[in-house]
Image 1 (cartoon, one colour):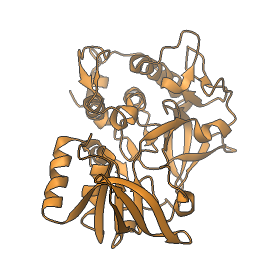
Image 2: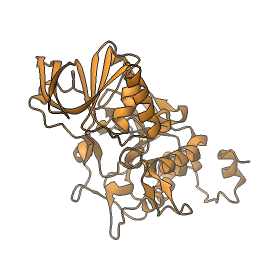
Image 3: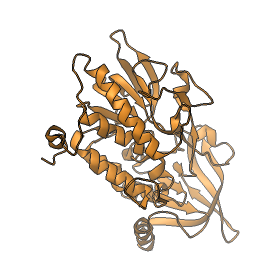
Image 4: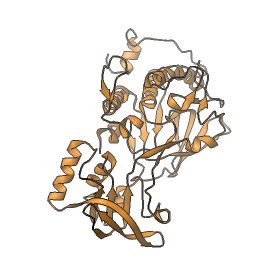
Length: 359
């Protein structure tokens, strides 16, 4: 897995739902660059965060869609890749000990009698927070479904678009379809536990990190992993349990393959998702905010980054950083209503430098 999958040791595994709600100052929905920088700005004013993301690693679009694509408009960094920017942000927020809950999605958000918000994820984890920050980019990532007849019947049981628990694939005949980082990462991660892992890709070239490709080819050479160049044609199973599939190979032949777990990684699309049901004012699937605090129509809920909208909005990472800074100032007034906030600069404040571990 990529370096950011571990979230610098602060990731809470999605292996098991919490039995009680996790209480925190702020829940940030979205672990992309803007969500990560929000951790920094909130940390400077003594606010603790939990960060939730539907992806299995931090970085949002930067890590998932263009980890090696150069970005040219980040201040002071003439050129930086999406993954490098993510890694730098993770290093920057390390002093604040944010906790990450990955591979899960906030499905419910409810105001509680005491004014706090209860957020519940699709795997049953729940959080109680005084402030919610939506930094979900254009919405939640939704996996693209392969064009295979009858695949819906197997989804959630033997067809999976993400890995929530590695242990669930123990002793399974796993077929992974795709040629990007997710396909290669999970080929490597599941090989030790699965009965057999087969990687299927339409061509013998991969878009994944070169080191991952080398590791995969080494496993193929040692006959620990099978590599098939072709495409999945049909699925066969009983009820919701997949049993086998048919491959159409590059040479024109067909091959039948035992398969009890299929992981297709065909990319992601963006959808607003459950946010649309949270009672917020929406305009063309974006969340209107003010430009003073970046507050939504619901007190205590803020929206920063590409998911918000206001006059003059520019969908830039830089703009999201600015929005995170102003949001944090207002969040402080909610978290600490009786505490005066004194604006300070990191260059001259010994207090801030102490928080950052530089003094």
